[in-house]
Amino acid sequence: MRNRFWKYLFPVIYGLVVYFTIRLLLDSVTGMKFWSRKRWGQTSLEIVYSIFVSYIFVWVFRRLFRWFDQRWPHEYSTRRIIRELLYVFLVNLVFQNAFLTTFCAVTDDGAQWYDIADVNTIPLLYLLIYYGIMRSRTFLKAYIDGKIQLEKITNDQLQTELKFLKAQYHPHFLFNALNTIYFQMDENVAEAKKSVEKFSELLRYQLYDQQQTVPVSQEVRYLRNFIELQEIRSSDKLELSVYFDGKLNGQQVYPLLMLPLVENAFKYVGGNYWINIKAQVDKDELHFSVANAIPGEMPMTAPKAGGIGLENLRRRLQLLYPGKHHLQIEKKQNEFLADLVLKLNA
Image (cartoon, rainbow, N blue to C red; front, top):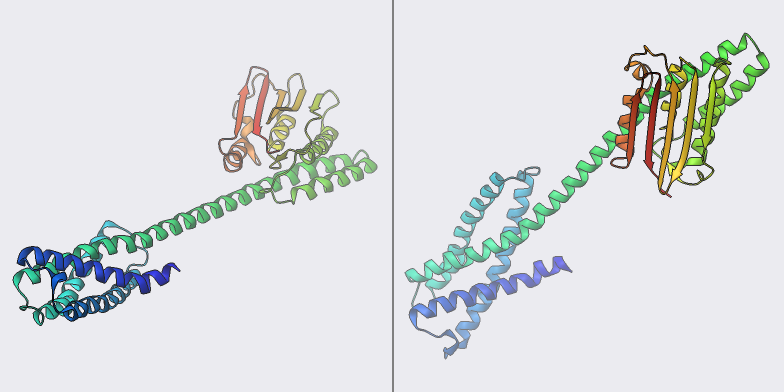
């Protein structure tokens, strides 16, 4: 419907507006009143001719605008607009003088200087308005398409980075789990088989798409299995306290964000040899905290070593929970504390 208006109805309106504007200005100079003409045939001819010329005008400039888009398909700058306006001015100068000035020369008392002035100024002013309307639509569409394309590229880059982070994590997980089972084989083959079963469950969960959310209950079950697997390789003197809030059920979270904190606790526990793990719901937030004893002389950079690491976790949080998370890491004299808060999706 809109294309039909611009193609069929707009030239009629444009031709009438240009014609009546020129006639009124000319009559204000000459004192003639074209509507008082005795020969209405002349006025009718001028109106019909103006509409006919407008159809040609619209066709010419639509082709010109299409040529602009083909010549500068990806350039949307002030320089391009200036170049387009220069072409528009030159084409309009040739067009109006070829059609309107020659027509004025064979009507009334011939082409006077004010005829030529009006023919070259009035249509140009309306043309600039037409140009602004048509090209603003084109530039706006190009801007929106560019924004959509940029968002798509950005999203693809983020997805690629998340997959890279996921690939970084898997080797670390495999190494720890297989190392645990390796030492268990020397002591109890039956228990080692159970560990393999548990390990297979953990690995199966690992293979899910980590860019999709899962019920937090699945994440809790995964963490329980992981903790049980780590307990096997831990010393008997380890004091382990684990609490998962019963309200953690169907809320949606991205997987494997709490695991690195648990991993670090088991990896660097020392000193008095205790680990406290706690997860609970507070309104629409998940609070997950891990604290573990460490040797007093342990360097601050140690928990960042190896595998996914805390820097990897921070980056995943930035990508998956922008502005909707809080991660606090703190090292005290004999303990290491990590507190993670996530905005839950019900």
